[in-house]
Length: 445
Image (tube, rainbow, N blue to C red; front, side, top):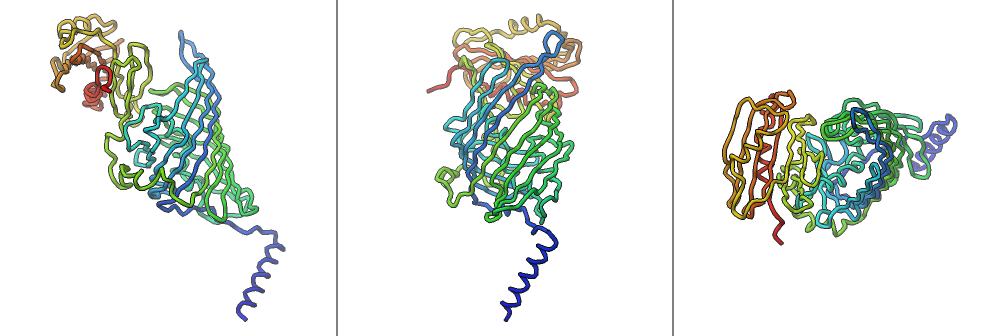
């Protein structure tokens, strides 16, 4: 008898829905669980222009870029604010091709760095390889595609009928837009239709934030699919119009970017994400060692190489110079220029008097007070000398440190670090850390 009553109640409810024309509500929600694995396919297409200053005029340089990423991802932990807090990925494919003003650049991820950890922290997203330091180019490859950790957080976690909308949460907007900090969030999701077990939705609106110290305004038009049986987002097409101001480590740009993402749940853990493969991955609640978060750079000529903290950004390079800028929470703090110096005989180096003689001839530099002058202890076989002075560079009150580093075989580099006088305390000893990390000469094979 009970079953008959329930059956009739079901028919009455169904008839009521048909009579009133109301669609059955659905809940777009993902219950993130550790150990779940997904296969991702992501493509990116970018077209636009870069704005550069030449001869006191703004010149537009055309930009085109494409990228493709294929990887498996294992969820390690959920995030307190929604979505995934930490995941481990193994990339089968990670490549990009860009062309700026006719200059073509191709990048790919090395075979030794295909295992990548993606983790949210108080400063945003952190990407690193437990198998060794990434280059800046490799970091860009794995950190600049769409942030898959935020996918569950884009959903409303509430029952909706087709046509109803929800506000995208600030944390999800910040990660989806790849911002270091969110200024404005006007992104809105909308459930469009439910058919054949699939819910279709859109995300539209504007967002504004900071990335690498530059202000960026984005206009988003996205659409996605949510599988009702597995309760997982399976597809997302994300298009954004991106207007970005000039920053301390990036040019001003106007771009249109289109991301296509496909996501497939896996029944089993791939061998590339097995417990053995993840043996070096720190626990989700553990502090990530500095050695894993540092980046590495090698001069193409082979004269030197070094590892460095990722808040140093390479902004220019020539055959003899490498220019880097230090950003502290997105704010410009200091600039370092590494210059190839003439080679000395093995076991010898340029004398302090000769080095300071060159410094005295630097254009537009007026030293007012010497703060440090002398040798700095370093590892065996190396010699390091520093002169730090307070003065004016092009009329601006600055503190400059001039380093000369020599190796056992006579290789030498000079490093000049400049900061505004009020930023000298913020810089601290990070310039010395950078200089002492430089290894001169070809690596030992």
